[in-house]
Image (cartoon, rainbow, N blue to C red; front, side):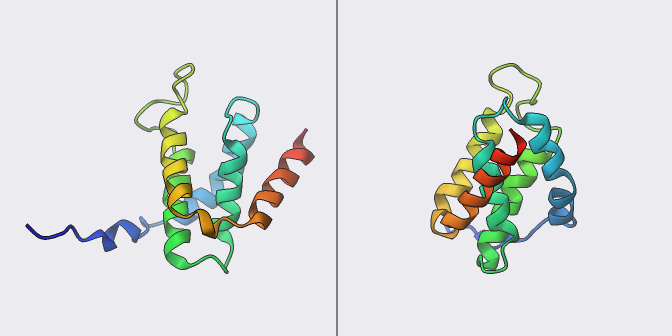
Length: 118
């Protein structure tokens, strides 16, 4: 048995980054106060659009953010309590794997954004 080829996991879906860039901030504004991990999602977004973040890390983060932004996923976001649990799991897996690429500046920018929205 040969090992699976994971290189395709890093290939972005056509239009994925454009989709995330177009819908991310709308989703953040709609979920403020309802999603406890929105600060982490914002930090991941800043890391994903940062040119100094390695390309492979940016692609994985964009894929996780696309899952967060998509209106239809495994557990619909309208389901009380559990609606965002799958989104959180996907995002946290990506962030744990790519932790060193999510820099203090990304976290600070996320916090600054949240402070400006309060």
